[in-house]
Length: 129
Image (cartoon, rainbow, N blue to C red; front, top):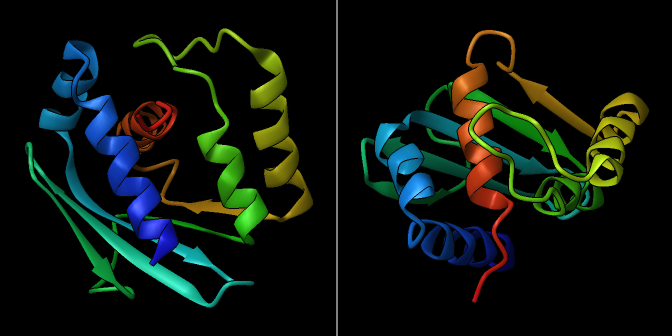
């Protein structure tokens, strides 16, 4: 699964940085990712420093990201987001917000679990090595 491999590589690259490793160690919850156009679904289960990636949706995810592949790729185009949530490049953030407004990307559970979503975005914003 290309999407699963890409996410795994991004997380591996991210946790080499101390600040992102701290974020990773604090994450607990299930994140569902659904790419409608590619008929792909994943569940990322974070458990305080451990990540398990399942093919398909397992249980009821804490947060679900749903959209077309291009909308999901917009998440990975974000620059590294500092701990305070300020984005250095507004252009990439505008692209993600445009995807949200156009309906290409939906984030369910964002209002109830904003820290989990922000930590995930920080992990995914790192380019794989």
